[in-house]
Image (tube, rainbow, N blue to C red; front, side):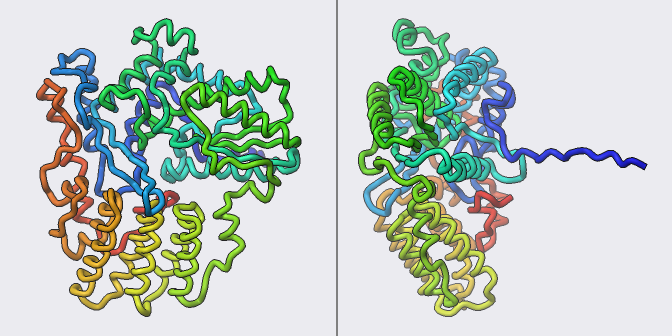
Length: 505
């Protein structure tokens, strides 16, 4: 008997938003993790905010409502929470876009006619195979989070592909854009979608999707045309419009200059340029600089490198150094001090986050821990100087707090941590996670961050609604709704990995 065999197909882990229909793209944009990319505890549930707004605008589009004034005539329409980048003076402002403007913008971009234009334009951006963009938003097709799918897409498409290209190219040059989101000129969105000539000739024509997006961006920023709000997948795609247009212009310029022996990878504002002739690399960097200047952007001189060997520089320097170093020790404190030393040299690095996650898992397997307060002190100092890692540091601290004998000791430790964090200005994101680990010991502790105030049950205005005249629409924007009381009640003293790990289900 002949047995029929079928070749099994490997299931895809993610798909690009540009593969989606307009309806699918709209649903993707309206997912809570698309609206807010900032790591927050699980009781912050933006679905409870977006759904009522979505339901209202389906029946009464924003364009059909009579407004008191234009949103751009009001300050603080969006809510900003700052995340420190280096434990010192560098700040990254994450914005929670006003939910009404966010949903309206998602509707606008996913109207069938507009979505067709957007997808078609991105198809033009991708026409040059020697310039590849790997940062188009991805949706996970597994139980993994979308953010985890995006990171894997970067790892496979950038890091692993870079190693592979060592067979074809001798050198790689690195470059990235200074303050990319904060520098994007909103009018350049229309240039990107329709070309500069048409965009300038029809700059008041809101039937052009680029102009309509430009207007919405100004609406949420007090009429400002410099910078776009960072923190959502929707705006990530808008940034890709401008950067994709830069890729298109760069490709034409290099073709005219007859520079063909190269491969360029771009992930958001980060560039890797592979060449066999170092002079070609310098010419490409020069052309890229000129293209970006034409869009009001510029390369970061401190992060732009000359030609280097491919294999040695395919992996980021912080990861290379962590691979070289002794990564652990039988003694827990020495192990954490090794991580602290690495973090001091490479703050906020991806390798630091991985090292902390591994330490968390090691700690979870230990029934007893000697000197937990000293370990807490080291973990907090790591998070203080590498705020991107603070959620993982907070999870480690939550486990160490459980090793203290009495509630009095735990509260005293939390109080000492609070005093340490108060030294860092704009520490709202850190306060959110400190509240997460202190809530189970004392839910009455108060914090200054507005998101924390919502958890405390206080009435807080996150967004300026003064421009909304429709009382029904205004009622849908309830900041208190984003705190899921059921999830809040269910939190336990020890923060589980699913709350901070992007690859957890």
